[in-house]
Image (tube, rainbow, N blue to C red; front, side, top):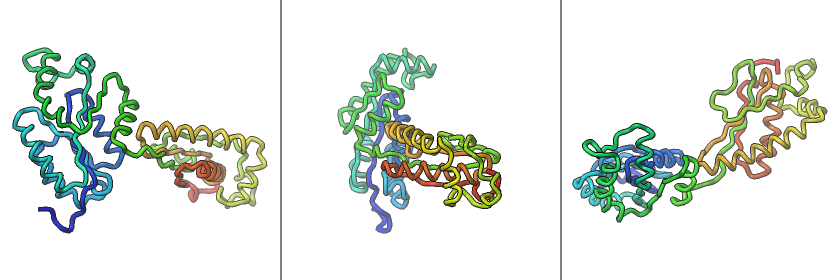
Length: 296
């Protein structure tokens, strides 16, 4: 019986399917969407795990995605019982079967040089045939079937997101400033170098200010290419955000760098972020090195 103090898990997706079909790739997509992800779990353990996860934020708010191994008659029977049990605990329960054509599966196993788990005494194709026979019952029961044949990773993600009705909103864009003298942020996706801009550090009355101050911004506006740079940067980053959205990526980190990370990079990061917000992009601003020195 579920503890009254636990909350109802929003959604549970049971992932199964053919070996080599893309179950692990599907699990990664769900994890990127905020689901609590579990790999290679015996069916009988899932109800107990859901009881525990009733206190886990990501499981409650997004859902649980679990890759379940159902090869074998006993495991198939277990899954039937388990699905009935968890429908009492979870708002929405779905069985996702990840499939691919025989020729595609053979090619994947040959490419990776992996042995098919059911091909110990036969060919790869023989193992695939055995697995199809074993999984036919669950294939018929599946709520959703995804065929990954011929799909590259981004296409598979896009198809899965669309089929599952999951969010394809633009990712959060982290716009950060930094100083090259302190190193490029290791987790940045794109880096913009603005050291070509005139350096306010060489103007005595501006040295102790930062790029967030109007005096620094006015100083940089005198540079004739500033507006053109911001316009082109915003156009590129708006496009990039939409491309990342299609692949299911939830966050995009744009790092803007000058020498010390106090003047130019801060002002340009603020200007680009302001323009992106006007076009509807969800932007968060961070200034990593703004307090580390006066050299920009």
